[in-house]
Structures are given as structure tokens and as C-alpha cells.
Image (cartoon, rainbow, N blue to C red; front, top):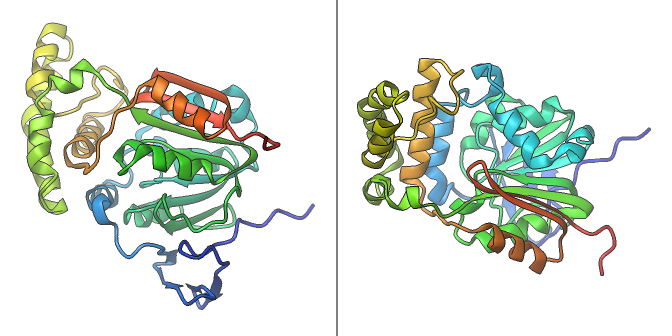
Length: 323
């Protein structure tokens, strides 16, 4: 049986199919997109995501299940997919938007999916180092709001840990849904409001760190982790002390959530997620009801939206036949 070809690269500006000329991609209307390190670049730079690109290239192995020996990424992905879709993932064309260093890329490829991984930041280079491009995997640096594909090309569009960091979550969700083929699925998550967030010191630290150059922001995050993480470790078995410390400390830690991680990995996980929380340029919050309303407004069906993970986890299906 002949294998279905990849969805073609198209010009984000003109929606014209691009021609590959010695690794660069040229639009009939005059646009040209260079490849660097074998990765097509559909954006001129990583803009507000530069800090993310820096962290993933420096800590590209940290969150891979194969590196940690703990199925944290697999369990999260399986929960978001749901049993039926998870069981039918082999052979599906998946657009992974906001791929980072590839913690979910690894799981998708292991499940037999054909994966197109995109990210606005230079994390695409870490992703390629971890999972080189081949017949089942390709990578591009691209903007979710200006993706280099014709609409409705993918069986599954996946976007975890990203939507809340974009300028407009509703625009981002609509752009992702636009890539789902009839009968296909969109899966994503989003931060939600919590009393905990509004009563912690992290908001104050973020006002300073998010305005620093990426390398300085990462250095200061490392210093904060080195100061506060030992205190979190000492207090991990004494809940009242941990509750008080979590209000003062801006550091996120996982001694209770992921006890199987080594001390070195506990530090790296704490560093990465603390860096995310203190240097992200955009940070939005939505309720489960708001996420559901957005998906209903797009005409999606089979909507599932529940509180869990980092806030709200959601999936929906594009009707096989449009009304």
C-alpha cells in the first residue's frame, strides 16, 4: 500500500506550495525561507520565546522519559489523548505545535505516529539533536499563528504547555483547530486560575526576570533554585512548612509529585519549570468553561475539557462532515 505523503510546506504569507531549492524553500510569489542545520525556518527569529529556546538547548535531555526513567511525559500525553485515540495513534499524522526539546516527540514516535514538530524558538535544534529527522519525523521553526501548511491537513494537532504563553489564547486555539482535518482531533492544555498563584512571590520575581536578556534570566533562575531547592527538599515531608515555604519561594519543585526522579533531575526539573514561570512573556489563565466555549464557537464536537495537569486539559474533534 502506498504511504500518504506528508502535508506539503506552504508559504505562511501566501498559502502557495513551496518549492525546495537546495534545502531552501521558495514561494511563487517571491518569498524565500532558508533552512539552517537541516531545519526549515519560517520565522526570522524566536522573538518572545528566546528564553525557552535557550533553556531547551541547554537542558535538552532533562524531561525525556528515556533519560529520567520515569514515564511522566507518556502518562500526561496518554491522559490528554484518551484511551480510544491513544490506541489508534500508530500511523496518524500528528502536528506537534510547541515541540520544545521533544519530551512528547519521543512518546509520539514510540507510539508509531508520523510527527511534524514545530516551535517558534530555537528549541527545534534541541529537538533535532534528540530525534533526528527521518521518514517518521520532520521539524520546522514556525509560528503557530502563521503555520506553513494548508488548512485541515493533520489527523491530530497537539499543543501542550504552550497556548497560555501566546499573545492571544483564543487566536492560537483557532489556528491550531484550523490544521485539524475532518474527523481529526485537537489536543491542548491551558493554565487556569488558582489562589495559590496569586498568593506566591513568583509574580514579583517575574516582573524582573522576564525583562532580562535570556542568558541573564537563566543564570538568576539557577541561583534561585540553588538557594531555595534544598529548603524544599528538607520540608518535603512536613506539609505545614512546605506550605509556608511555597509562598516565599518562587521555585517549583517535584519531590512529592515525582519522587522517582534523582536529586540531579529534581534540580533540573525545578530549574526548567521555574524558569518557564519567571521568564515567560505572556501568561494567560482560562477556566474550563471558557475553554469549552471557545471550542464550541469553532464548531468542534466531542469536546472534553477537565481540570488536571497544569490547569485545564482539553481535546475535541472536527466534524467529519461540516454543517
